[in-house]
Image (cartoon, rainbow, N blue to C red; front, side, top):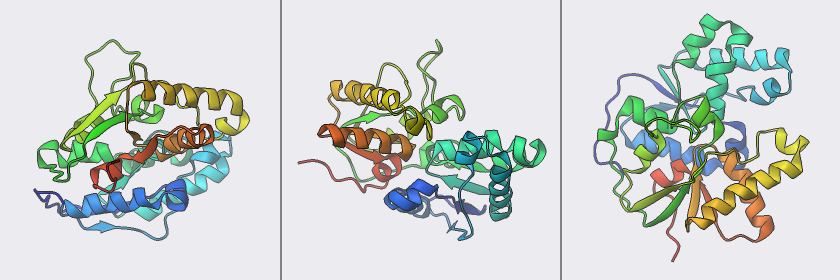
Length: 259
């Protein structure tokens, strides 16, 4: 799939978030395919489990600590850990300090990468070649964790020169026209927020969908399947004909163009 192979002596592990494992395994399979086609030997530790984010968000610190300890033990032997999720990576990188101590958390967090971040920062754009073209307009949803905790792109509220690691990676796909919204607003999912504040959550999601549709996109993509899941459910409920796919599926050439 990729023209230029990347020979890496370091060991790479794949971390699959819970909701992807349970509901969207195609995103995990696409991530594995991308890494392997770049010439990497990818490991999948079967002992892996939740990163603990839902427990942290609900104040269950003791329970979350056990997940952090387990994550560290499961992935400690690998040089890199790659996940198709900015929210889970952000949890490991920015929340584990209060659970297992800052020194241990920093050592673990520096090895964990979101997929586009890994391709941009570690592999390098010059090595990425995606021979399968994708013709069409794609809306990019910039999720909150990706922007404001992992710095994968500049949030729209900051008056600085724009950059986007996600856009840079997707630009390597021939024919793909990426369209971003004017403002990077939350989709409204927020994990348990969508449960505790369903009306506001749904309104926020519909606002995001409306702006993408106004841009005339064929589908909407992003690095967090949880955000896409939330908007996809709203679109289906409203009978809105738009597709939602994880960025890994686009990069792996797994998305068919609409005829």
